Image (cartoon, rainbow, N blue to C red):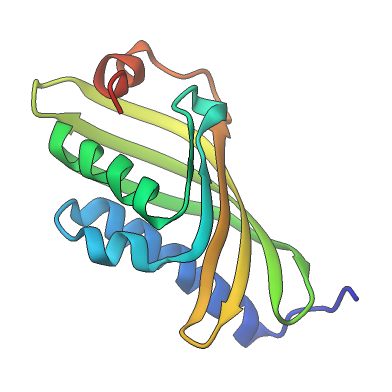
Length: 149
């Protein structure tokens, strides 16, 4: 049954997304990276033409390749919304500006949205299904950097 999240629920859900952003921007802690996901999570980057990764092992492998290819990352979050909420699960939506530089010196700047299915676990809110797609056209540099990811 659809419920309205409290301010604390909303803050906890946004913090779970911020944990993801801090982990992806750190680029050095794969354990922290996968800790933001449920064990059965799906990382769906098909909207970016980067594939779909099921389970923590596949997600870890994807981010290991990303961290290997990039020298810098910075993601900013805006327009965070709780779209659905029932106490144990939630769907959140947010705009993200992602910036980075590859180790080969290729700069990336993207404007995307995240559509996330979240699950409340004994360790707090975790991402169960992560979908990312462009809000604005993607630059060619994304394919140049992540073609092997």
